Length: 308
Image (tube, rainbow, N blue to C red; front, side, top):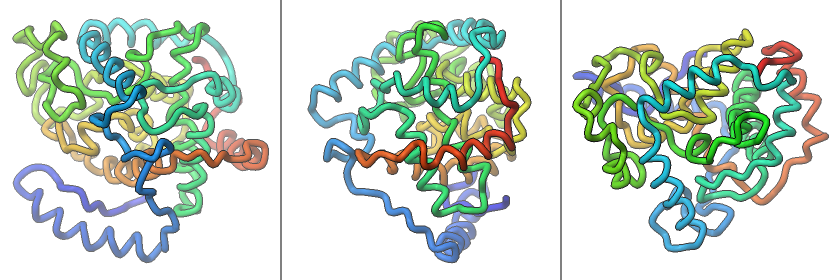
């Protein structure tokens, strides 16, 4: 499962590692003849993740981030993790959860307004074409957003700012690379000396496993997968837990908190992100046609029913 990465490494050897890995990654992509090409615009004819363009949808997205940045505090995250780790909301299969996700539209996403199950399948199918032998990655793509069921009544009907959107660490200073960073000034943690320094309650290189992330669907689905005994490999779980951590994997923020294992797993997240972001389309996937394949992967890596 080893793969080289063109993104900068950490520490004093970062530039050296970058130079070595760039050429190797380029050769890997070429050798496998990737077919996926990122489109130039999203489903609305605009640039992907453009948070500055004027539109009614963008106004709603900015309001979403205002609420998220104000309310996602260290204490709030601890409270949510304590509540949801009980996994007492439901018992159901992975595929049943995929179907439930049809009821959710992500208000934080400026690129798509289709039901979430279509995004899952679009991402999974694009990866499947380019990485046919990495079945764990196909399944990871299918399930990476299932935690968005937190927005549904049965699972607490949490507000969207506690379910979706970019994630970021709490318990340390809010990096300026976070989108709409200006709204963090109203977050009480920004005035708390225990939480408003670069390291905050953490230490350099402590590893992301030891860092509390803003609460949402990423951490919830990671929790569900781990507690139900999934056999997905470490990179798959890393992708599930940190795929919305754009300040890290897009902007390079917070790397001082990462461990060596985190940097290895980040290589796969960088690959996954291209498909997660750019496969969003108005061209819908035939769900019944692809269901048997994905059901076989679910059976391979998960129990028949999971606690949620």
